[in-house]
Length: 267
Ligand SMILES: Nc1ncnc2c1ncn2[C@@H]1O[C@H](COP(=O)(O)OP(=O)(O)OP(=O)(O)O)[C@@H](O)[C@H]1O
Image 1: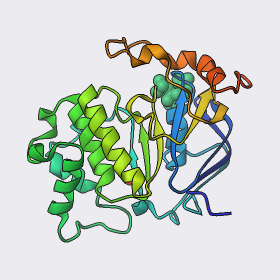
Image 2: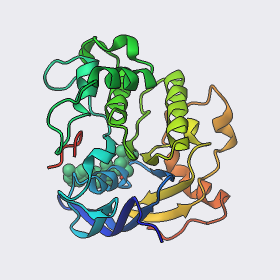
Image 3: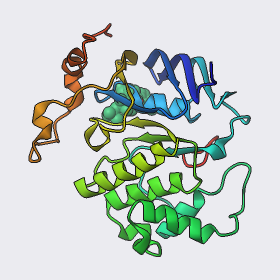
């Protein structure tokens, strides 16, 4: 059996008085594209933040690329796009500078030779090569999100963990993102991605893990998109994930039991 890329076992996380994750097992193998789904507050972000070492589990274990969380993890092989963090936060910087910061990690504290070319390529992958020298504060929220994706891609990771990467990003950019992900997945990238619905990623996702109240209630085939979602004008504002029991029923698995240091950028 090969070493899993991500291996979380029996993970419990408490945040304040809340028992947010209640014994989660999550294994992701090389080349898989796993979608992490679930209603608002089900624990998706908490799980990915635990997986990338931002939050310590109160119980259970997490290994990345065969190494228990800690200094032994080869962080430079892992890209992480956190949820809803503005690329414009903090000191003023250009899109290129934000992306360049993705080239730095615990084992490389100076930019490598040819970094400008790498940064340009990463921005090109998210369709922002022409905005490289713009201050991130001049970019829209969706464009800032794409800068953060470029920052994760620039280190050419083997594993990419993304927390709602296309939230607030327009349809055309979602399609561009899906095309980039398809290309990367074809080249063997392993992906764990938090999404509210599969949308443009539907053809790419090999497995779906559904959380409800901090418990995995489905781990298997991705849920089928419901017919209404195929209508372009469909209103995507309401929380679809509250309907996940129906979707999991559609894949024949029923509701299931009842019941998402290192810095976020550069673990
Ligand atoms: N710092 C915190 N202190 C206490 N409770 C927290 C904290 N952060 C998150 N929670 C709670 O943990 C639960 C899970 O939150 P989490 O952000 O992981 O959910 P999520 O599935 O990612 O939700 P969403 O889809 O809205 O992003 C929620 O009930 C939330 O209120």
